[in-house]
Length: 240
Image 1 (spheres, helix red, strand yellow):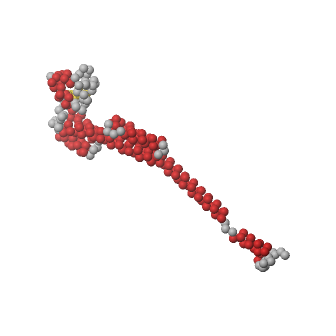
Image 2 (tube, rainbow, N blue to C red):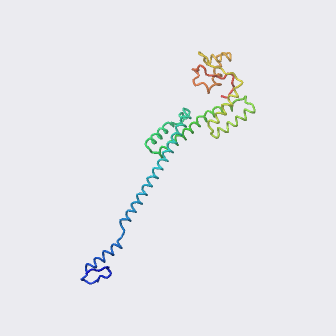
Image 3 (tube, rainbow, N blue to C red):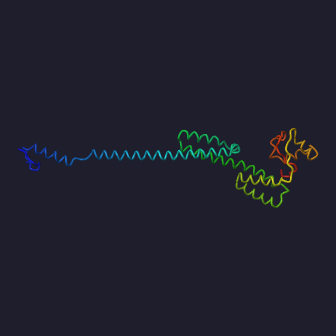
């Protein structure tokens, strides 16, 4: 006996085939859609991982650019400050650490070391000229021949030195020193010259060699050895 629709199939025990058709049809209509949901979830998860990976690569590229820029700035700072900065602190060591970290793709560390090298080089450079400015300013303070305008300029130099201006303070101090010494004679050392010979030539006796040396302390590294061609101030009365 054939039935055209499962709803017309009797539910008695003799109709097991009809009940099977009914259950199968109900399952087809109401079965859970597990596979499509899992597939969609996998797609979404994969897209999220890809997006995070792309973001990580973008951030890494940005860090690399910043690190390279910092290392380049450190190279320029160390090169510009040169030997003056090296007298105060070994900035080359910090720069080498930054370059090593950059080669190893340790971009945050490379940037950190490079910025530290730049700061140390600039600070050491400033301290170097700060010391030279202070030395000149101290000598000018003890000089008796300054006029009113030069005294006013010396106050400006002192203010820069107190603010630790570094090279700007030295530039102004050196300019004032040249102005003070302008009316005095400059002598270029010749082969065979000594302080005693120069003193005898300009002051009439070799015993005045100390006057030549005192006037040129910042220029003479070794009083027993003068460099041929260097210029010495003769007749200057800067403070000792």
